[in-house]
Length: 176
Image (tube, rainbow, N blue to C red):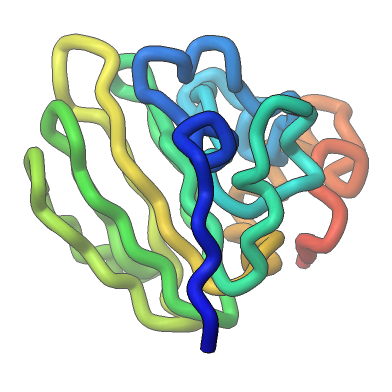
């Protein structure tokens, strides 16, 4: 196999700089983001080309996996959900609570540089326990990300707002 060589200018097309994240917020609003406690910013940095419209970067071309930075204000997070594939979280800043399960909930507190690997089909959610905005990195197999199975309780809450749950979810996710 011959190796491809790139100039520094060509290589820069594959680099997302953390200091530039504010310019790269995903326009996609997932279903749980209809509720204030799940308001967050998502930054698709590798994969998820459908959420990227950055002609200066080629990071959406990755097929095997995707990486997303997520930031939340205090007491906000990601609602309980599951995927049919593995998902991993790397805590970058702050303290977070990761909850596993829906009826018999197990909570684990994690802090910077802790890594949590969530097996397929395990319900899980996250909450920022810090007093300031905090960041984590989420990794999933597949270019576009795994379909999401939301907690039935979350779906009921979104529908109680008068929203059609299917209209506020990202295409490819399941509502049940």
